[in-house]
Amino acid sequence: MTGSTVIAVGTAGPGIHAGAGVASRQPTPTLARNDGEAPLVAYDEELADLVRMELGGEPDLSERKMFGGVGLMVSGNLAVGVNGNELMVRVGPDAHDEAVAMEGVRIFDGGARPMRGWVLVDPEVVGDARLTGWIERGRAFAASLPAK
Image (cartoon, rainbow, N blue to C red; front, top):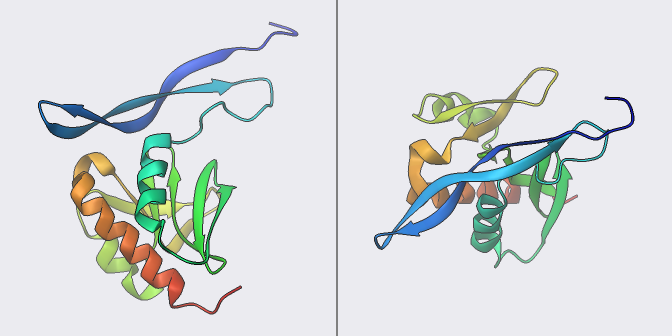
């Protein structure tokens, strides 16, 4: 298909949807491109909005596109992010083993190698209520580091 762009529809992951008075997470559509342009949506926007809302009171909060998703920084240090449909959390090397032993948590692999101290949390497994605890955990670790 020379000279054409193929757009594939997939799922970026769960989004937050209300049903019967209870919030549940459902896949959020994403579009991937083969023409070298950035994906139209590379990560779960609704999960990213939840993270932004939770960190909204942080005085030195910034946001940056990274790892094909979005990362939120506290004083210039990455705290949490959204990668695909998962929450990326910087827990630090000392808390790494404890974190990856928890259900729904796995080591973050930035592409080249696994990154000790960084984990991915599956929102479907841990649930929205526990996601806020993970967001706080990442915020606290980033806040413990010297500002950049």
